[in-house]
Length: 339
Image (cartoon, rainbow, N blue to C red; front, side, top):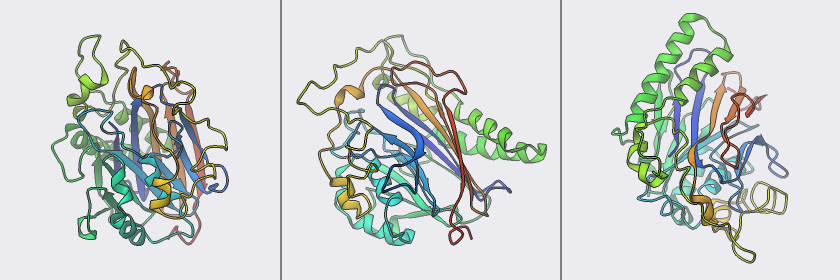
């Protein structure tokens, strides 16, 4: 149950995206990094639990940007789908040569393959250009929403359709982002102070406390209220991992398909989302759950990008001391995109 907050309201940044990735904490992920060949132009984390090694958020050297949120299903298992939703993000970030956003969106809307994954909303586009919000519930271009095309705009996206304004966490997140930017600008603070203020938003916890035996499934009705999800489900009995000969999680090495170079992600949405056996080991959908990663993406008009990621729990569901799981990457996008 993730959240993404997207704003063009800061006078020093053309685009800011902040994101909480909420997940079962034993699900293996790779922290933000430049991806291995042939997709060395992509910066982002990777989900190592599926062979596509999809991502939930990323940016490229040519200025492509994307962030994905899932739809809230009745259960976590129902939300999984036959293929990885992260492959949809990969298909945009790794596609070469670069396509205009409209061309990619038209292709995805027409693709039946996108409907073989669980429900999602994908924000995609180029820095300093309008961003498209597209989902696999969209069947025509006139159902696509465009955001970030003008200054002073802040929009939230969580695990529901974009125009659903009933989720408290979305409304609160938008308000808190606008307030944080106003205070930051009026105080004349620097970038590190801005990051701290945005992390404060991502740490906003409105989740009620259920009994000690409550699982993530028990908390599902309440996730729409809280931007941050604290550690829950610690008493849930984890399922055994896949036995030898069954579907298991891939290693992070180059033998896996997807961004490590052995998938067809750069060819089309159809090839990336449908390539290979991508069944998820169900043992990763149980046990401790919470906000596992927090990401802040700061983009300036001249193309300077700062990607900050904070990891809160390791793969054994143990808390990472604040700061020790931080990664920060800076670069400048190609001049032709930074206009």
